[in-house]
Image (cartoon, rainbow, N blue to C red; front, top):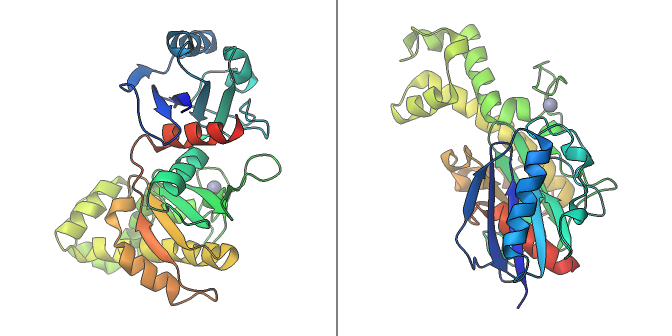
Length: 304
Ligand SMILES: [Zn+2]
């Protein structure tokens, strides 16, 4: 059975482990801080590979940023990685095959192969965190697009309110349905709705209300927090309906830090009541924190 050294290269930490072609971990997971300089980062990658190279068949990276169609390079800007990261040719790091895939795509593949969407050849993984990310499995294949950037669902436009997104454009789905979107909705409701005056957060400045406050408010039955979350949820559902109508998937898998605060049955009913394709399932992700490593290892196995 093939053994793959999987490396997850994130902006704050690098994690690695050896994984087999069933997605099972064969070694302990090692963690490193991401170096600030590109030559130090390349040295760390080489040191990790040298340590395992004798026993493995290939190396697979999951990384931030868009990956080229050869799965050898990151070809978008990656503000959280050291300068020069998008010049690195990953295939030069080892004498054995090296594969690299975008981390959200890799995590989607892990959900499809080993997680909540196992056996479902059409499934979409939506990650709700600081932003909104997506990975699309269409007819059993990872959707990559002409340049490897397909699935940028967070940039889908859903509204005409003119809300400015962190990317500089207006009315991106992620400016409503992400953690930063929730914060903006909280600020908006506080400014225009008297319900805020009776809220447990009424002494705060609207721009100081955090996503954490709103979650706390939900638990304390705060009417303002409930209203904010209801609008937030409706904006999420709008995007899920659009995606479902376009891709006709069997399921949508919700992951990311905010995912666990949604009632997936409620989302499922709301989506299914407004689609023209057959009903879908909405489920929480199951592949876990290391889904990027598992997914990229399994994708590499397919290629080599
Ligand atoms: Zn945007």
